[in-house]
Image (cartoon, rainbow, N blue to C red):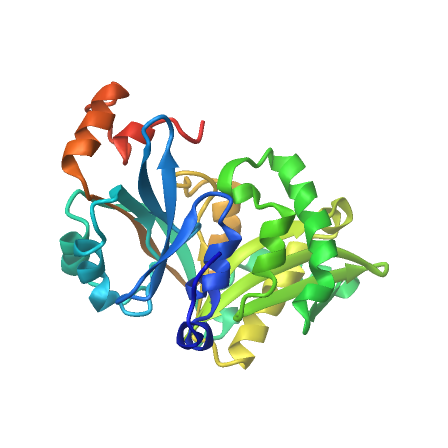
Length: 313
């Protein structure tokens, strides 16, 4: 279980909250970095008898970015390496990132973002606006005041998504993981209703002035009714009315997410711009890292950490 003091509990929301880290405990043991107030997951390295760490999926975030370098310098020798995809809304510079992550610091994926201080009519693609108008005639969208009341509906919809796209690995999320996520402060749940059925839902996590699109899922009826357009149109209005300044819609599916993918085009159509999300890595025990890489015959690979090459195939 996560050891978290009341100060951390009261100040953090969304991806920064200890309960979110705990929701990923099937994939690693949550560990708090004390100065930056960030969460990482310690993982057993298969067949090696030692540990490395990764940032929480899908994005690594800090309360105090200026203290991350100190945390990584003092993290100890019990970890071989650390890797993470960083939020594009972090309070960091390119220089500070390279000081924290001297081994790997590269653009990973383009994230589409929304500046909510601007009218959506000025940037949302006309195709999206037309589909949203049509969908909202048939589909009712609402904010779920008590997210836990709708956990069962969400799990059923997500099961449809898993089957439809053959989702595996950490992004598959178990029902137990979702049960914990639905208790995280900063969670916003929006649902679409058609014929008295929940046909689509969106999950968002907010921290400070940024709302992060976390996940969306739909039933077959929801896909046919284009409930996604009604939900995203509602989301832009909802968060603007709540004083949120930015929305991070994320990027395309998989790795670098080709800009031509359907998911990327859908998100781009709602966005007012984009920001790069960086993949960063740091070797914490060079000797052990090199030994593991050699044992896996992974020298020369661009994958980080090299000894985990192919882990998600």
